[in-house]
Length: 403
Ligand code: HEC
View: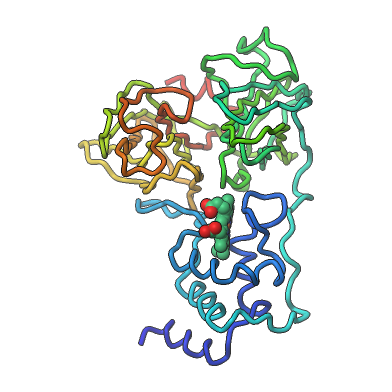
């Protein structure tokens, strides 16, 4: 008998209870989303809230549908892997099969996790709401937040908080530096839409399931004096009219960090995914212009996305996989944070590969009968491998790209 089966047998005799055994697991693995105000439909905090869901909880944890996580393989160890261990699943299984008893809320039971409000120094909200119609497609909306950054600030944590969660498909917060000409003629604080690309650095990205970005000790994002935050918002109408006022929360650090964090991307817009194609591959690579420490990955594809891989191309051409995300799930765009920063030498080639499923087998495919090219809307495709790196503090993105 494997040791944990033996352990499980002991547990079954002793019995698992909500307060002793299950509540700590929910706190650790589930309440980030399943608490009031977060994306999980129902809070899973109190016994009264959890009890009616007991059977469904057993089902989703045994099938590993919850918590959502799609890292399949690769050489990097990940810091934010939220999965339950086999033993933890066994505890929930036992508890539900024994009719989910409450047990005693002992004095040792810590309080249910509440949002760590005190960790944030500031929260900036869009001054006006954006009306999201019930139907149709909206071009990307932009809002330049009116707050100016008076002197250089260091951000050690950042979170984008959508207002109308059900229709906010993604948000990118860009940092517009004072010398940038990007959207200079656009109004401040009012939504507008405008096609085009920018080289501005990205402060943060939101997509469903994305936790706040908290940078490792000694590392932070720099907000240069005089810069502004520009939000790019993508809404996907859900059948009802909504008004969204998204906000962004920041935590400052006053001690200047040793490293600053840059968000980079390897992307391509040049592809055509044939109709009915089951597994179509698109690759793009980038060469590190200078030394950097690799911190995290955030792949971004649309509805036909099936898998995404980050890999290193070695000198002789050998490809070593760092992370394979499979299946890629459009409804869950997660970031994958390395447990240990990985040093990348100047000249390192980073290869990103995306696979798409444009067949009728893909339940998210809006139309398998068409060839699909690049576009901003979800029924068009994208291929972007975002990744965060740390570079010595004081290096701007422009300087980093000087070889
Ligand atoms: C990253 C956020 C997130 C985490 C972490 C998370 N959930 Fe969920 N969960 C959701 C969302 C959003 C839904 C509704 C959408 C869906 O079903 O995909 C959901 C749905 C569910 C459902 C309903 C499934 C159904 O078929 O209707 C159950 C049960 C559930 N979660 C249990 C859990 C448990 C137990 C954990 C921890 C072990 C957990 N979740 C962790 C976000 C999360």
